[in-house]
Length: 437
Image (cartoon, rainbow, N blue to C red; front, side):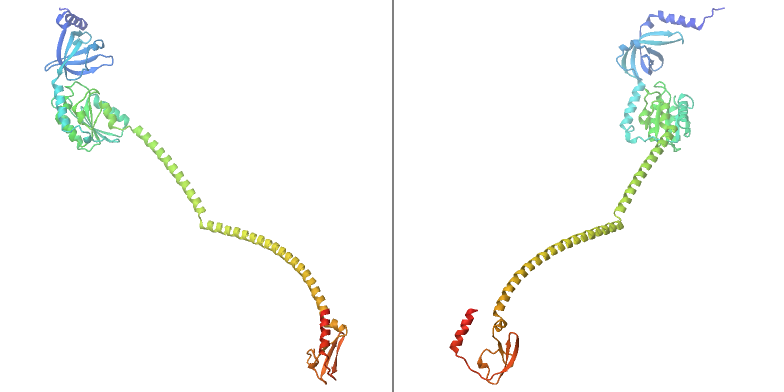
């Protein structure tokens, strides 16, 4: 019976054979970079391929110092290193020590050419981008029915908002018929009038994602009336669909977060808005109430009754003031009149004293000139029958009745004789008498 070896023994034997092969220990391999990934440890894992075959490759962090460029999908490179067997998995891979850039691969060249053509046609222009509804309730998904992408979308959607309805079109996302299946899914879900579409798949190499670089898929996304979120591969993967879509998500999970709003956060936000609205309304009511009170005070201030009362009170005050002024004026005038009367009285008294003195003088003079006084000295006053004074003998004749008035009485007589006196002598006597006076 032939010897039986364990898997470990076989892998160790093959690894030893590779290690003893001089050509495999120092080899340069030319090919196109595909499925390139930068690990957090600093290692670079990628696939090196040509038109017929491919091989796994890795460049450890210790050899990255000699890498003068960023390794990307579609680059044509020459890798210098060694081909060794990874004993644990029983597979061989190229351990890169130096990588030089040779050119662009066929797929990447096709990608750039189509991208430039569609960009020149304006299919990437921002004005054609439709906004993603913030509170969409129906979400269409074009992806494979199995795989991590659809599961991630379902899990995140149910967690964020269980009320959102998901519609899945099970499409082929890899292979020859993938582009037709994706286009059919986009057109079918677009006719359903949904709020938003998610078109994508999980990560993979540039060949795996190539269906989303096809022109027919790009035009289907561009012509879709429903907003489209592209979610193809990982964050580092970029496809033509990403450029045409209305929004690009780095992963299907991120697309679910963009398409489905968080209901709990929405509730909190609505509650916050409610409180804010309530506070705003209360502040406005308080402000309006304050203004109303101010207007009421102004109405009271400008109330006609109040104005009338004020005017009436002002009139009363003016009346009181006028009365006070009148009384004060009257008292002043009375005092002034009394003072004037006193002065007039004093003047009158003084004038009366003066007049009494003058009167006494006049009395003295009148007494001196009084005929009674003269008659008291033996003289009398002679009048005719008509009581007219007789001052000449020519005014009477014998037989006329005359009256005589003396100091102590009167009497009547009859003229018995008229004897004119000597004029010269009498005249001299009268002049002498007048001179004595």
